[in-house]
Amino acid sequence: MSMLPPEVHTAVNQLLVGLQSPDNVIRTQAEHELIESWAKPRPDVLLMALAEQISGADDAGVSSFPFGSPFLAVSHF
Image (cartoon, rainbow, N blue to C red):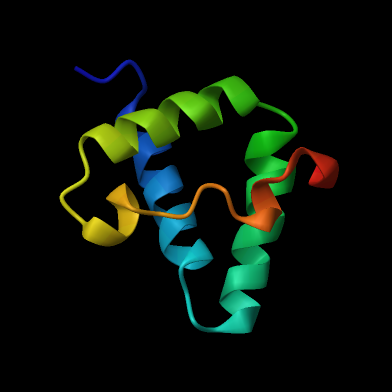
């Protein structure tokens, strides 16, 4: 059972798709959105959504997403 509304999961899923994009423009926009729309204003919601996305992911790209990537480093916040 999800603790977050479906629109949060939709937004996080779109964010993950953008972060995995081979297109630098799309990926850069997603990185900016990650920091400015999620990590800074509501890191608790971001972490909960990521945990729920990973636990229920059918997509191997989501369930094995490299969350240790440099753009998630604390120094960026």
